Amino acid sequence: MIKQSVKYRIISCKFSIPEGGPMNFSTYLEVLLSAKEAAAKIPLGVYDPIVWPELRPDAPTAMLLSAHPDDEWLSFMPLGLRLRREGYNVVVVAVTLGRPEQHARRLSELTAACRYGGMELCVPGPEGKGLRDQIRNENGETFSGAVEEVLKLTNRYMPKVFITHHAEDGHRDHKSCNRLAKIATACSKQHTFLVETEYWQDIGEPNCQLEVAYLDVVRVMEGVSFHKGELERNPYHLTYPLLGMLNAQYVERVVGFGNPAAKFQFSVILKLTVFKMGRQYDYKHPSQLSTDQSVSMLFPEKPTTTSV
Image (cartoon, rainbow, N blue to C red):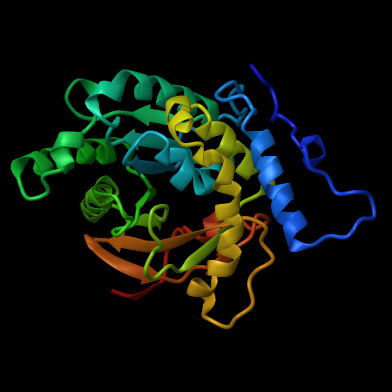
């Protein structure tokens, strides 16, 4: 097992910039492509688990409602890592394990990915095989069964923070997870924060830009690397940092068009709301949160609601 991140740098690529030489856009693009080619040789799924401080017995819970194995890292762990660092118990709920013929492989990869991140894993449904069939019939009894399975978990863990895909995230399973999460948070006996993330499609009305630390970008790439079968099909982990960099531009959707971008190298775009007594509200929170600010600022003990 590799105890620390593999250190690849531009200097190890086929193309390098002569010392003191000129830089132009063609050179910039060649360096990017050369680095991506070199990064394709980085080992997958061979990293020792992150060492975290022991959780308090009364640690709050963040529940990650994930449509597919690998979504937990790609969509949720930029925030999940910060929550775990600040003492949250992070619980991954794998709503599906992909196609039935993939279940064994994907469950094995998901288990290893969660072990690396120090997350607790729950796979609901019959025989612990997920809820794929149930969530694909949103108007029938099977979807009601999926709701019951998720409610069992929320009643068990009583999450303070619920993280899932946004309602129009481009994949029907992502959309179904959003519906499940909203039903679960609406049924909660305590005020519960709902965090919606984006991957396949942009959030329509985001309200928060979260900075992601350099080391956390590395950890997301290491974490998703445990999903080897998916990366062999499509090595999307290699372009993940570019998505984080692109959000520096897209943050104008959060702070308003024409305003300057924050000085974040990497970030994710989120939508935050809070559920109280079964109703969903906007609430006051920072629209941008840097790595030197606590995530508790996003999830206050007594949120001040601003609208329904």
